[in-house]
Every structure is written in C-alpha cells, then in structure tokens.
Length: 282
Image (cartoon, rainbow, N blue to C red; front, top):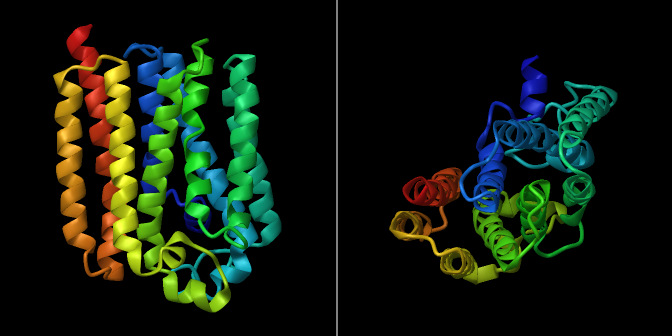
C-alpha cells in the first residue's frame, strides 16, 4: 500500500494544493463566494483524483527516464517495485472516479473536463520536445478555473481567463524552481525544462512570472471590484515573493526545492483574499 501511495504522491500533497488553489479561486469568484457543498465536494475530490492520476500517468511514461534521475530513481515504477500493468489499472480506476465526479456537473463542465484530461495525460510527453513544459503544466493545472465557471452556468469572461493566465505564470514560476533541482540530470538524459531554457536568467524569469501572476490577479480585483481584504492578501503575497527571491538568489537546489514547496502558501494567500472579500461584502 505504501508503494501505491508513493506512486500517487499522496505522501507529497503539495501537488494537490497547487492544483486545488486556482480551482478554488475560480469557484468562489464564479459564485461570488457562495459555492454549494456539492460543488465544493466534487471539485476537491476531483482535484485529488486527477492529480493522483496525473502522477501515475507521468510515472508510466517517464519510468525509463526516472531511473536515471537522482530525485526520481526510487519511484515505484522506476525501480520496478510495482508492475506497469498494476499502475495502468490504478490509473483507470482513478480516472473512473474522476469521471463519476464530473457526471454530477452539467454537460459543459463535462466537455471542458475532456480537455483537462487530455492536458493531464499528455503533459509528460511535452518534456521530450517542448522547451517549456512548465507552461503546459500551467494549462493543465488551470483547467479547474473555467470548469468552475461553466459548472455554475456562468459565461467565461475576462476574469476567467485572467485567473487562468495568472495560474499559467504561477506554474511556470514554481515548476521552474522544481526543475532547478533536476537540471544536471535533465541535461544528461535530454529532458527539456524551463530551468534549462532560461539559462543564466532563471531567477529573473521566475520573478517575471510571479510579477505577471500578481498583475493578472490585481486586474481581476479591479474587474470584480474587490475590496481591501483581497488587496491586503495580495500585499502579503508580494512580500512573500520578495522573500522567495532572497531564498533562491544563489539557485541552491535545496533552497529552490524548499521555495517550490512554499508556493502552497502563496496560493493560499490569494484564496484567502478572495474568501475574506466575499465574507466582508456578504
């Protein structure tokens, strides 16, 4: 059981939170801070299932690469402690669970979920040819935002796509930090990443992406007439990003890994800004 938990990364829930936070941004903004218990349950459970499925699919496709990377060589498929056929069965089970969740939403949400499924399952392949797979990850991790809008019969608007774009920039930033730890191994085996593509300007690129993320969120705040609670947490987010820069300025792999993990707090700050705005006005 421990091996299967490890395969789904349930022992490392950071990915669940990085997928969940933008979904909750979208869900709460779509319904002005009053999501139904049913929708909250569906989106949270769906997030856990799809993130787990994405990890299993990633390890199936990357098992030969993972065995040559220091950080991933002990993963269950890389070291062959779990048969590939068992991993396929687990993947199908997780996807069926996610499908059941989606069936409780409307038909528009179902169609968007098919796009999300394609992005999640094809993401591992992009590392073989795309110079910035981190951007593709951002597209995948952001699909919960439009799904949250259409599930509530809300038309997709500038707000929707600004939230989506903010998440793409955020994913590039945090996953580039993650990629710094694997940079040397990736160069040896021919895997692409933004940490490699940005070259000597990795720190500057990461900060640029964080700045774009914050710019998109501030724009959302203007469009939605958010009040001081939202901007207060945006201010905390900006301070947090400044502290992240101090942490990663030497690009020490351990520091970058810790900075990646702390992005959970950044997503949480943004959510709290949205949550307390609606709590204040409602």
